[in-house]
Image (cartoon, rainbow, N blue to C red; front, side):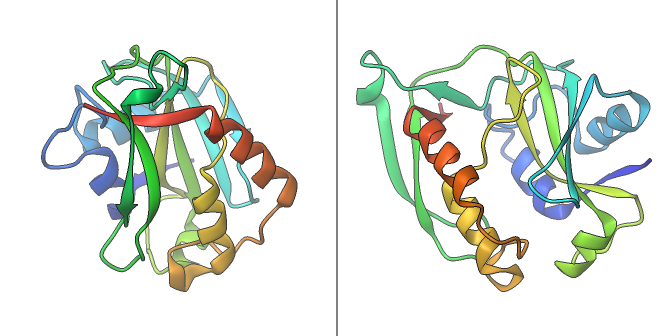
Length: 185
């Protein structure tokens, strides 16, 4: 099985500004080389047959991607409308400012099959393409953000995958994201 970095993921996981919320201590090429050379500790089926997550022990200084909301940090939550790319419509997002989570114990690349990426207009030579990555303390999946589930249900034209909305998974996602948020320095 071979893995390749998609341009979509490269821009988000390895931005030019080297922000501290991105993957640290390696280039996109080094990250892909490491994934292709290592056996994941755990393979988790994704939200659709074309998706999988590979749990790898974190070999970088990359920090966890989410922080639990508490009475002590709630005042640091911010929100705004943002798009992941120029083609997508902005959606409401929220994040912490001024907090730094611990270094993640696991890096969990989110992989799509070559066939699915081709349906979405991205050609790769490898079997799997990286579309994202979770940075976590346990080798467990973080629920997809509710707006991403909605975008997927809207289809490829709106930046999604075309997978119908699973109401139970959506409710579980809302429960998680009501109690957690991403962070920015």
